[in-house]
Length: 87
Image 1 (tube, rainbow, N blue to C red):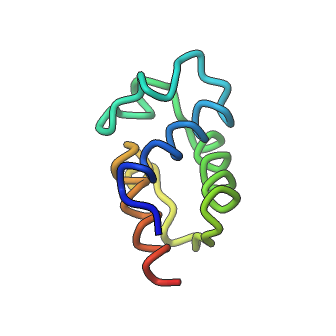
Image 2 (tube, one colour; image 1 turned 180 degrees about the vertical axis):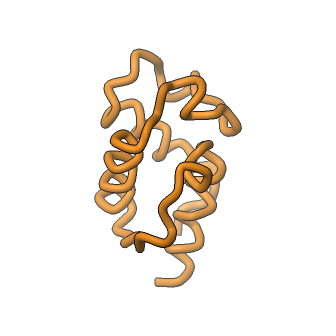
Image 3 (cartoon, helix red, strand yellow; image 1 turned 180 degrees about the horizontal axis):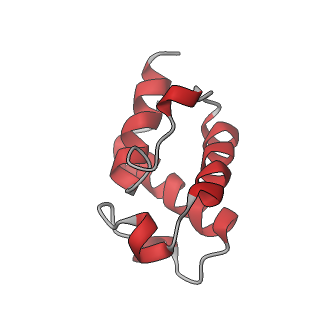
């Protein structure tokens, strides 16, 4: 299983790629507010969820999805790690 730092890096790369952000993955801070700093909205959230399912092979349930739970890379990484540990 990937460690949390590797998970965060893969999440950042996936977010930049899927949302066509004009920043490098390294520029996204682990605690940056994705909605405030990168205009991530509910449509983008869906793209992130699909990306997580593809990149990490996890399946997310509707009750796990919220803007708050996906507001920072750290929070997304926590969700992914929990799902990976539960597999």
